[in-house]
Image (cartoon, helix red, strand yellow):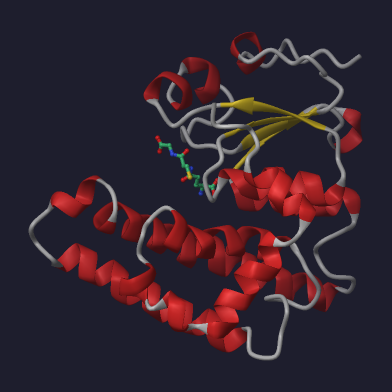
Length: 233
Ligand SMILES: N[C@@H](CCC(=O)N[C@@H](CS)C(=O)NCC(=O)O)C(=O)O
């Protein structure tokens, strides 16, 4: 039985199954990337609900695992050389899980870099820009009267969406076979309509390839399971 007690986070969120991957998360577009990947890969894991409230995500216990106070984060009790591995940043976790299992990151070195390229496109572009769009269009920032921040992020979201629409022409998935790049990207595309109510302003409804891609992604059983893990309530 692995001893996870050296990780202070386990005092606040105790591990019932310390031999399984411990996931600290909440079902947001960044959080579900990891539960979906774990479901797709069939890796045993235990999910702990860490809400976005300061009492959770900014608690000393959580900061001991991720000093950047953001979900998701994991501890793999069976990390490299059999030692436990703590890890934060969803992109790094996805690459780790893909390498651990030898799945979802292409077969050849060239395919791997194609997957990484689109993963980085999500991490560096889609995630931060869509996140700001959500803030200025749907959440607290929508009360700001100056239209420039909102307009800027709508314009940038529209530009990114047109890149994705073109890329998906004649393709089922963003980088060859289904991969961690899709697991990173598709939840953010679905979020525009579902949580940000920005379907109209971004024009996403008029992008047939993007719409079909979201449907294809959401039809996967592992996606349906991971999407609500850990449960909100
Ligand atoms: N680059 C990070 C971003 C993670 C992130 O933004 N997480 C949000 C939820 S989607 C969060 O935990 N926010 C809480 C806060 O900022 O206080 C990753 O991909 O892991």
